[in-house]
Image (cartoon, rainbow, N blue to C red):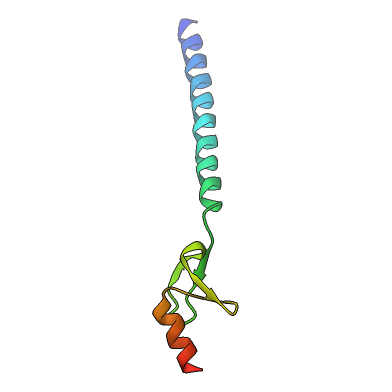
Length: 74
């Protein structure tokens, strides 16, 4: 009888801890989804953070040189 109680307690702890760990994993994945937006450089195709990109006429560039190169190309 004592062994059955210990097994029941062990299973209960297993399910509680497993549920807790699963919830933590989902929360970490949700944090990753809310990551910052990435944009593609119109000149070279490099993906960079939108806040670090240089925007001009609806296009994004990774550097001032690439912006100038595109403007000189036109």
